[in-house]
Image (cartoon, rainbow, N blue to C red; front, side, top):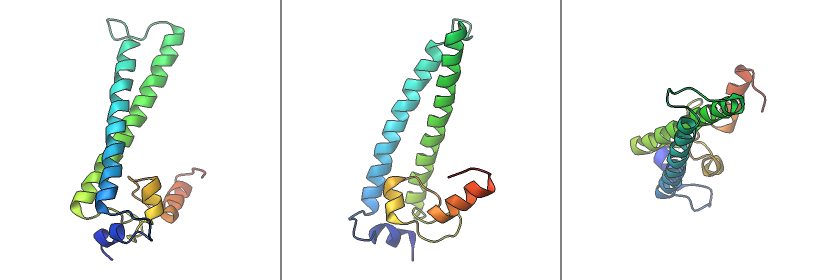
Length: 129
């Protein structure tokens, strides 16, 4: 089964390739807004020399920087999913090479792995589900 047929045969959910693109583009726009807002927050928590000011603001600055890093990773994942979609590789698990179920793609449009491979990956990395 090809990547294209995975998106067009989505178990009656009505999801098609353009629908996934729309989900991804909407997600990308939201994530870009988040990155922009968090970048402003990080910059505003610093003084003129680029140093965090005060104890509470230092912790706030660290939190904003962590949130910004996470938002950037999410944005990169969404951009990678859009690229896979353009290349006809969207919806195929990077682990087992089987189709990712449409329900997973609807919940996590940028998913690279099926649930089984994601669980195995987390287990090998010592993470808990």
